Image 1 (tube, helix red, strand yellow):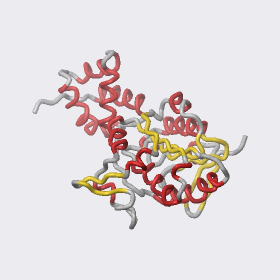
Image 2 (cartoon, one colour; image 1 turned 90 degrees about the vertical axis):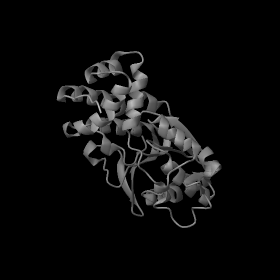
Image 3 (cartoon, one colour; image 1 turned 60 degrees about the horizontal axis):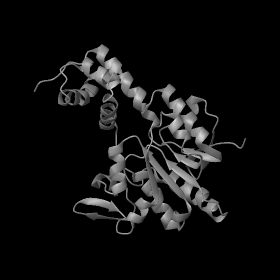
Amino acid sequence: MFSLPMSPQVFAILAALIEQRSGVHYAPEDRELLADKVVPRALDAGFDSLLDYYYFLRYDPAGSEALDALVDSLLVHETYFFREALPLRVLAEDLLVPAVRAGRRPRVWSAACSTGEEPLTLAMILAELGVLDEVALLASDLSARALERARAGEHNLRSLRALPPGVEGRWLETREGRPRVRPELVDAVDWRRVNLVDASAVAQLGTFDAILCRNVLIYFQDDTARSVVSSLTRALAPEGHLLVGTSESLMRFGTALACEERRGAFFYTKARP
């Protein structure tokens, strides 16, 4: 099969373009990995040079859409229902339910939600607690393809691997080998395409009582992650909470958010002005 060579120089400019667009970083040792994704697209588009393909992506009016499609193909969509579920349950029981009982309608944003398993898990927990209709849920991802699957409520069998007893049959069912979430849960979520590295796009979403940005920052360089955290911090309401993955920490970014522990789950909380 015909292929195209990716020199270190071309790798560097392609990786920089992808990082600028998505925040996802490719180190020099990832050159072969990136080439495996880029070369077939360049060939399909009729290019016999990756440098020419780069110029097309970077400067041609039609290149922007092609770059979005390339980035979409590079994004990792591996997730599953009830992944790191304790923080979601603590968020729902200790923070969202009391807010609802106090007469408020809290807003929660699941950022970089992939195919939607995280916000739908939270929706299941809120439905179980009887407050789903009183919480405004927004979920976003950069991938239009992933969001299409999320809106359809269709998932793969691997997404069920951490499912607790009682969920299947009540909140989802498997048809023809594909799990499907109940439509009322899918409809309870406002699904949007948002680029986290675009601070203006984040600002347009308004403010939230809680933001979930879990297992995302690990794909960013520190400068990009710091910028994203700053945007998310601005999007938090006073006393709002940011949740990151259990293997992630904001301490190295010098965040203004205070880390607090609740029943074994860690929250980064914004102080009152």
